[in-house]
Amino acid sequence: MTTKNSWSGNKSTLLLILSRGFAMTAEDTDLIVPPLTVFCELFSILISTLHDGEFSSAESIPFTLPELIPVIGILKDVCLGLVELAFPDSRPSIPQDYQLAVRTKEVIQGQKTENWIHLFKVSVQLLRQLHMRDLRMGFCPSSLWIASDGRITVLGERPSDVQLKRARRGYRPFRRLRTVTRDQIDIGPPASVKEVRFLTALRELPFAIPFATRVRVLQGLLNAERALQHGDAQEFLRGPAISIKLRRSHLYEDAFDKLSLENEPNLRLKMRVQLVNAAGLEEAGVDGGGMFREVLSELIHTAFDPNRGFFILAQDRSLYPNPGVSLIVEDFTKHYYFIGRLLGKALFENLLVDLPLAEFFLCKLVGPSIIDAHHLASLDPILHRSLISLKNYTGDVNDLGLDFTVVTNDLGETKTEELKAGGSNITVNTTNRIEYIHLMADYKLNRQIRAQFTAFRQGLDNVLPVEWLHMFNFKELQVLISGSEVPVDIDDLKRNTSYTGGYNESHPTIQMFWRVIKKFNDAQKKLLLKFVTSCSRPPLLGFKDLEPPFCIQLVGSADRLPTASTCINLLKLPEFSEESVLHDRLLYAIQSGSGFELS
Image (tube, rainbow, N blue to C red; front, side, top):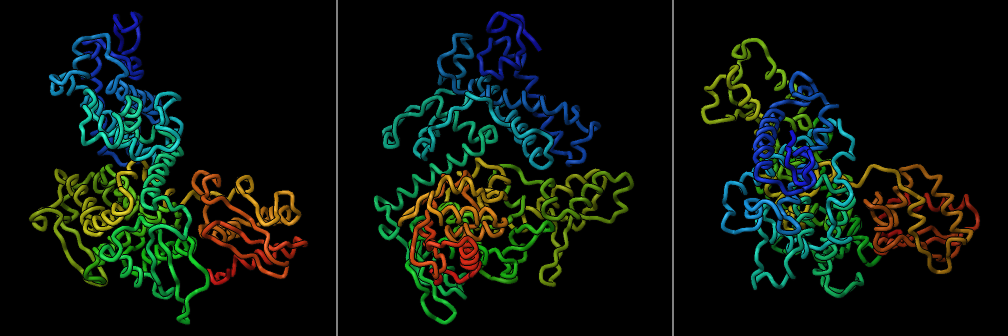
C-alpha cells in the first residue's frame, strides 16, 4: 500500500512510515488505519481459535510459518511506531487534525484519537498472542522480538519506582501529557517523553526490551524499596528487622504462626532466624542473613511439597494449587496467602529457589494474558488432546454422550459440577462444542483453583507488587524464581572474587583452589555455591551482581575444614599446600549437609 504524497514527497509504504513513528496526513491515516485495524482484529480472532497444530498448518492461516516471521517483524515495528506517535517529541507540523488528536484536550474523545487508540490496542493484542504462541512453539528467532537499537531509551541503568510513577502520570496514548498537581509534586517533575515511551513499551511490549534490561529495572525497584525499608543502616546486624526462633523439624508450622500477617505485617524488613535442632538446642552462629536465606529456601520447598497437600503435580511434574485442598485444610486460603508471601519474600531478596511451577499458573501470575484451552497442555495433556479431538470430530457429536458437566475426584470423593447453569441437561453437539471446550478449560485452569490462586496472588502482592512482574513472560518468571539452568561459570566467579586475610589471586593455595573447582562436576559446583552463598544457582546476570561479592579468606591451619559465612558470601579456606588435600577437605565440607552448625 503506497501513497503519492507521503511526508517526504517520495513513494513510501504507509506501513514503513507508521513503523518509523512518523506523522501522517489525514488522507494517509484514512488509507492505513481502518484496514490495518481490521486485519489485526480478524487475525487475532482467527488464531485464538486454533490449537498449535492447526496454527502451523498452511490450511488454517493465510501465512506459512516462514512467511509469518517477517509479518511479525513488521507488526512489532508498527507497534513501536505507534508508541512514538502516541507520545510525540514535539507538536507535529502536519496535519492540523492529527495535531489536535495528540495535543488538544477538546478532541480527546474525538473519533480520530479513538481510531488511533483502537489500532494500538488491537495491534498490541495480536502481537502478544503471536509472542505467546512463539513461546510455546519456538518458530521465530529470539532476536526478532527485540526492538532495534535506539527505538527504546532505558530509564537509566537501574530505574526506581519513582521514575515509573512519574512516567505513569503521562500514560495517556495519543493524548497530551497530564498536568502535574500539587499532590504529585513529591515524586518529582513530570516524566519526559522518553520515560513515558519506555514505560509504555515496558507495559505493552515488554518482549521488545531485552530480558537483562528488564531484570535491571526490577532490581532497581527492589533496591529502592529495600533502602526504604532498611533505612540508613546497611550492616546486617543493624536496623529494623524481624527476629524469630524456629524448630528445624517444624519449620512450616512455626513460620506459619510467627510470620502471619497479624504477627508480622511487613515481610519486607530484614529477617533474622534462630534455629533449634532436633535435640532442642539452638544451632550455633549468629544469623547475619545467610541462615535466613537457607531457612527461607527450605521453608518454600516445604510449603510447595506435594506431600503437604497445598500444591500437586501436573502431568509434566510441575506444581500448581491443589483443587481439592478444602478436604485437607479448612482455612486453606490463609495458607495460600502465607505461601504467596514466602515466594514474594524470595523474589524481594533475590533468593533463587528450585521450584518448577506449572506454565498456566505462571501465566496467571504475570498477567494480563488470557488463560484458555491452549494452556491445558501444561496441566493435563490427555484432556487437552481429547478436547482437540472433540473440536475436529467429523461424526455426530451427540453420539459422544457429553453434557456440560465435569466429574471431579478428590481424595476418593467424586462430585459432578455443572460448567454452566443447567449444564447437566444440555447435550454437547456440533453447534455448542466450542463453548463446551472453553468452559471445560476455564473450569480446569481458573474456576477450580480461583480461591487458592486469589489468596496466593494477594500474599505475593503484599511483599512484592505483582505489577512489577508483568514485564516478564511465564518462562522468564520461572527464571526469576529458580534461575537459569546453566552451568556455574567458574571463570566469571573468579573474575568477581575478592581475597582477604593474606590471600591474593597469585597465592599458591588460591591457584590450587581454582584448579580444583574447575574439575568439579556441575552438581559439586552448585554445592560449593550453596555452601558459600546459601543458593545453588548463580545470579541472573552473572557474579558481578552477587551482593556482597564472593570472597575467600585465609584462616587457620591445614588440619581444619573449610567453613563459610553465608551472610557475607565468605569462604574461609585454610592454607592447604597439597591439591589433593584441598580437594578432599573442600568436597567433604560442601557435602556435609550439617546446616550452619558446621561454621
